[in-house]
Length: 108
Image 1 (cartoon, rainbow, N blue to C red):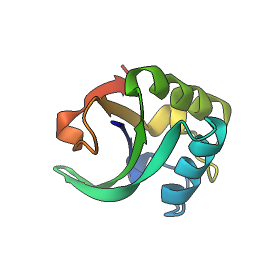
Image 2 (image 1 turned 90 degrees about the vertical axis):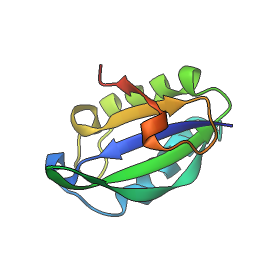
Image 3 (image 1 turned 30 degrees about the vertical axis):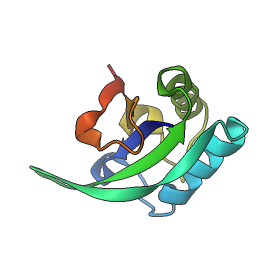
Image 4 (image 1 turned 120 degrees about the horizontal axis):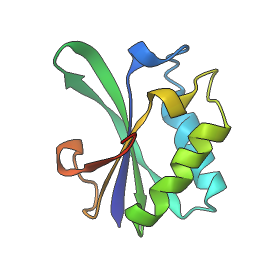
């Protein structure tokens, strides 16, 4: 399986509700009929800002799958948050890859 990581900066969200860690992957799994699966979440410390929320997803082909997530973020809000303006999407061909081992694909 390959990795997709969604990074959210709470400082860029209107409503930094922790339920986003469940709402987002559940909606993505529903939208993709399970082609993209939840693979957990973690908090990532960054210099100069508070911790970021990382949502890990797994799929057979991350390069083909991530555009569906970007499209979803443009079409739907999550807890009043427009993730098309605040989320970052990273991908890797590796399974359960760390963010440092992933490539930023959204936004460019």
